[in-house]
Image 1 (cartoon, rainbow, N blue to C red):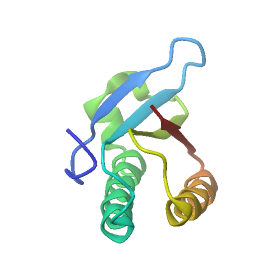
Image 2: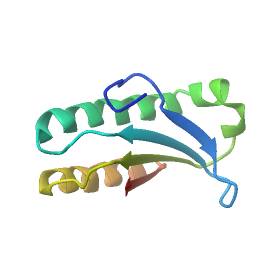
Image 3: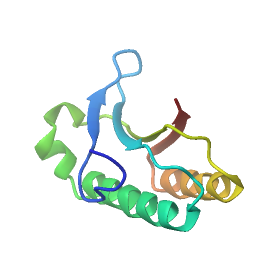
Image 4: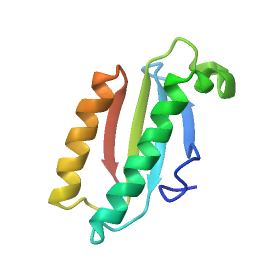
Length: 106
């Protein structure tokens, strides 16, 4: 599973310390072809938001019920400037919808 499979939830689990449900996106793509990468990432994040907002998350993963959801992008590569700007905007939008958003480069 990866960012390229925009309709699939890559990973989901409950953080034992915070009790929050974490929905992770596995992003292995380089940022050099940034426009295509950003489009795929946007589609993936939109799928995650739909999964949460529709309530499907509670049907597919009952442990998510009554927990704060966080979308977390786990990337292999450091984003370029365009990518950083995109991630900052996504964070505002996702948090404005009442969910958390995190980015982690590994």
